[in-house]
Image (cartoon, rainbow, N blue to C red; front, side, top):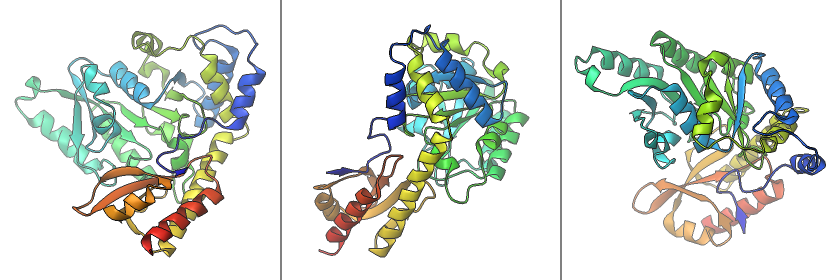
Length: 347
């Protein structure tokens, strides 16, 4: 059985496991004050081009989103997100459970459009009843989006400019950030991304780590008491070295970017093969997630040998599915997937 449901099916990059073993008996202080975390923070700052950035390590994407949003919002504020945004659809109300409403906007490929955001904010403050309403206190986007699409530098600049105009922060969910930064045709780099938002995180869980995300505040004054907020949420790991060793390894010798690029190369190889055998794409993306449409009867047969993610119904007889490559995907695995799909389509 081969699995292409998502990009965190394997454990961790071998070099991370080696480093964890090599440093296992080295005594270090806790709560992220160890030498490994300090080194990792410096490497992340250098990669982001933000020498003064505040960098915090946290367990996973939902936790990162919930804690950052809670830290940046006042009690009367909510967070603006795309209707398909992860915090709105797939995080079990984690943001709402902290007392903050998710305020949704239309999306295109999972992306918020600058005109829609500006219109929403203008209309909110023009409404004479807005003091009775939840205030938009920040904007949340994902890069890549839940549909594997990417913001351009110009799109990001426009969103950030609107946020500055209304004095609210722009927060970028980077659970799959490596795959976005290494995609073909993108004009966004890590330093450019850091210059055009107020908070973001670098995903490790989906990009080679056992677990963990690196939250970055380019301006450390954005959330001066963030560690304490993390503590309130139970999000501070006593053995913080677990995160530090992993991110120190990922940001040594460009490992993070090299393995992200590998996932993109495998996705491009997969796309080419799926086109050749006549597959129907719902959305062809530049990243590691590809969305296709199959007849339901075809999926029943394919599921006997291939794991894939059921995304949503397309119509009464068809379903949209996702295939995802990862840092660990091998060409032979993609070949096996293509063979299985071809056999189902041309039975």
